[in-house]
Length: 563
Ligand SMILES: Cc1cc2nc3c(=O)[nH]c(=O)nc-3n(C[C@H](O)[C@H](O)[C@H](O)COP(=O)(O)OP(=O)(O)OC[C@H]3O[C@@H](n4cnc5c(N)ncnc54)[C@H](O)[C@@H]3O)c2cc1C
Image (tube, rainbow, N blue to C red; front, side, top):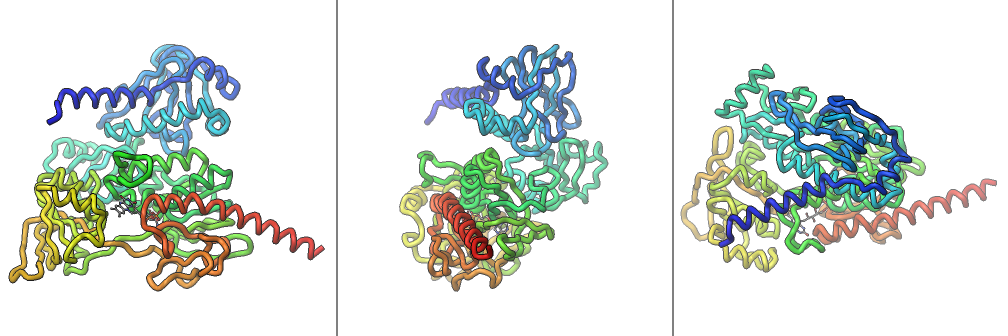
């Protein structure tokens, strides 16, 4: 048994270390280098440099004096979360994109600062690796700190178990956006909020933005737009590369493409991270001996891509692709079009659903396809069901067994050996809170506004078993997300995209349409793992360069012939 004081000490040390990185300062040498590309300003005590909710805010670096960083508690009470002194600077991830500031900054006393405008900052991030590292580390540390302490973001007010509250909560988590949730059920805080914002309880859930704008049960694309998660605005631009899907394959392609100087847009139909983003712990990804959550891997990759200048469109599904001379067009669900010289399809796969009566009624209202900390929070000390026999089902069962009262793992086959990794099987067998049910299938679901009871039948049992269970995790494999390609691109009998020689392409990831590549789980014959998706996404960029070089040669050749 671990000593709780020791654990507490280690936690405090870890937080101090995080804060040390988050509020690290620039040394005198770095400040001298920064002076060349910035403007000196003197601010009198109390002067506001930027307010929560403002966009396109520049970075301020303290030369002398103190800047105060404030967050706002509802209903509108400010509190200080940091004091910046010489060498320390303002800003977090909003410096890299156009999202609104999550905090307010003012001079605490008479303060001299360097003001670095955003275009100068971008140039600096590319040209001065030493300063860039300090700023990047601080940006990541500060955002993670805001998320961990639920400060600085938006307020989500809704009924804890309603499908829309869960949808919005999941969307904010998956996009790494800090938020506080207020459960509207029997909650005095929620009552006073509803009164002070004059909300109608029938309109819940609502999202209150930093500038106090209220969004009533917004769709994910509406919320994405309001939070400025999408940073592609210029739809006339022709990108070098457009990537469809921001799972591990698409994010890796974005990092390599943007870092090699190609103008890059990445379009994601839901939230970055893909399937991997729904995994509580990935243990077989190289370099993470203690595992890494899919969410963290995705957050870090997105920041890395943005650092190199990749542009994101979030919550925009691509509905079709067409080819024009020397370029391709992707039509989005909202009718906008993104154009690029090369397209990388990294749309991965989507979970299969169970065929059980009333399934639709309880989907996202008790039926889940991900087992992360958020879902675990919904079923603490309860009995839960996990359906499936693959690694994702095994990981989910183990993860949930830490907090649930009992996990029933329902497997259609006679055993797990053919479908699950041995290390997971051994841990499941050793767990006292997981009950394995082989040759078993769910036959009925029932409840009211949410799932309340689950019935299953095991082969050889005369009677089905019904239990009071409100959360079912369905992890039974996936099918490729290539339906939007219709007949334009060659796919195999299961819908996976064919690449390489079989598709008539000389590139390993080339599809049957010139200049269009496919990587990751959506590609026929790919290994369905995070590492292979990342490998394919990174490797495809050299094929894109080759394609551009050939296109230049062909154009030159055509020009010579024409002359
Ligand atoms: C719960 C779970 C746990 C897992 N655990 C592990 C593990 O421990 N180790 C491991 O190696 N693998 C694991 N895997 C498998 C791994 O996550 C996948 O192999 C990997 O995510 C595939 O990456 P991808 O980028 O090819 O596709 P995906 O991760 O599927 O990402 C595709 C992205 O494309 C987007 N998209 C789809 N269609 C469109 C469209 N038309 N327009 C715009 N965007 C679109 C999707 O929203 C999605 O974000 C796990 C999978 C699951 C579900």
